[in-house]
Length: 261
Image (cartoon, rainbow, N blue to C red; front, side, top):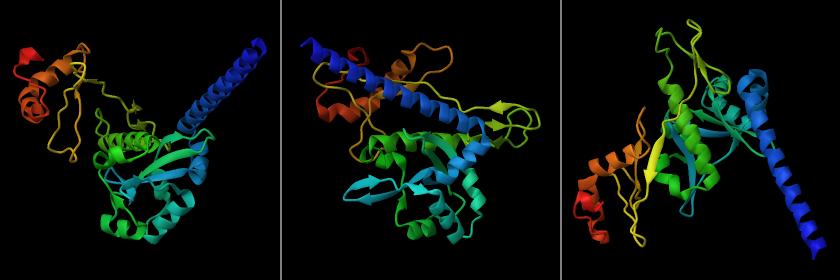
């Protein structure tokens, strides 16, 4: 029995070491891609690309489920050539991750091109991410969310807030630099607190008019500077009280007053 236990323990330890080693290798490779434009350029030539149009990802819907086409660099260059775009546009892409085998993932927004023409040529559609969110694989959801946020950040930070001069991204898209002042801008996260209110058997959910049909959410809010983690949640409940009452009344949660929350 002891021998069996030792064998299982060794195998588990070996698997854990391999997983840890893979993760470390990925993180080191990602760091190199972000810091070295030459290495990143090589990765673009062998990497996988996700296409966007004004922050909407390119998807294909098959049997009621959304699939995310993964396009390699050769195919991207053919697409750009087909629509009379300079293949250097591939360098407008941003790095969004890599696989366990260190295959880099990039996102490229083609918002300056005609949407309908692109869709007809690519046999798919640029779809609002919120609409397709729950019909995507978990891996794709994570990558597309990261890509959309990073692409939007670059679009909103094309100029230096101090000098007003244009900023330029590095090849990986991990930062933007104002060469006039030397200021380096990095993508920033906005902390969000989300809370599920439950009585043990039921939970309180709300929805916005912009949500796809059938989609609900727990209440959440942004955490401002100097605020406690509980503040955004309390504010969300206060500001959404009447919406909560109307939205969940048919669910039988019996929300009657703010004190009952």
